[in-house]
Image 1: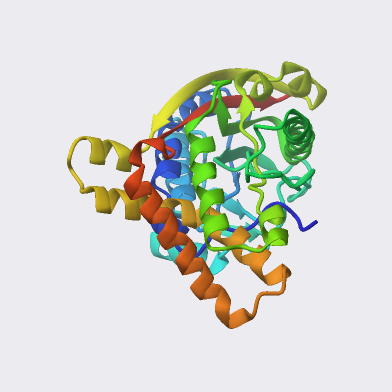
Image 2 (image 1 turned 135 degrees about the vertical axis):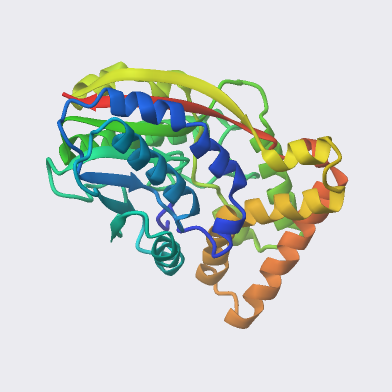
Length: 337
C-alpha cells in the first residue's frame, strides 16, 4: 500500500482560500503563543506543512511582525519551510523570493519524523496539515473516507492517534525549552454525517461514473481523519512529550466562496468551478498516483483526470448544498517544558 501523504497539486496556491481563512483565524492564538515564550530572543521559526507557500507566508509574516512588536527578536529570524519531498518546492521558492520579508530554507521530510536538529527551534507552527495521515491503515470499501464502517473508522482513529503522538514527540525534540508550538488542526464536533462526508460521496460517485476500475476504486481512499476536540487536546500526550497546554479553542470556519454564492456575489457556475478547483488542489495528486500505480497508460491519465473533475463540477452545480461549506478547527498553543 503506498504512503498516504502526498504533495498538493500545482494549483494549490490559487485554490486554497479555505486554508487561508484558517491561517487568518490563527492570528490571535499566534499572539498568545508568542506572549507565552520563555526565551529572550527568537532566531529559528519552523512551519510544518508549508505546501506551496501562499498561506505559509501569511502565517510567518504574522509571527515575525508580532515578534518585532513585542521586542522578541533582536535580528531577522531564519524560517524553515517543511513539507514532503514531493511538494511543489519551485512554487514555494518563487513566492518566498518575491516576498523577501524574511530569510528561509527548506526541509523536505515528513513531519511525522524528526526534521530538524534537537533543541534548535524557537517557534513551531502548523495549519491544516496533520489531519493527513502518515499512511493508510486500510483501504475503505464502497467509499473513500473512513466514517461508515466502525472497524475501518477505528483503524483510522488509531493511526491518527499514533501520528499525533509522533508529531508531538518530534516537535518536542526540535523545540528549545521555553519555545512554543502553535497548531491549527482540522477537527470535527459532529457525530452525524458531515459536509465533508457528503463531498466524499460525490467524489466516489464520480470515480464510479468515470469509470474507474475495481482495483482503482479500492485504492481510492482519502488518507485523512478529522480528530475530535478531545483528541486534539490530549493532555496525557502533551505531558508525555514535555508540553504544557497554554491555550486551546475550537472555531467553525465558513468557506468564503460559499458565503459569496449565498449572498449572490457570484454565480452558481463560479461557485461550482471554484469548489472543484479547491478539491482538485488537494485530491488530484492522490488520484493521479492511483491511476499510475494501477497501470493506466500515461497519455490517457490527463484526460481521465479532466473528465473526473468535469463530473465533480457538474455534481456541485446540481447539488450545491451538499458540498463542504465549512470546517471545524481546534487551535492549540503548547510550550516546551
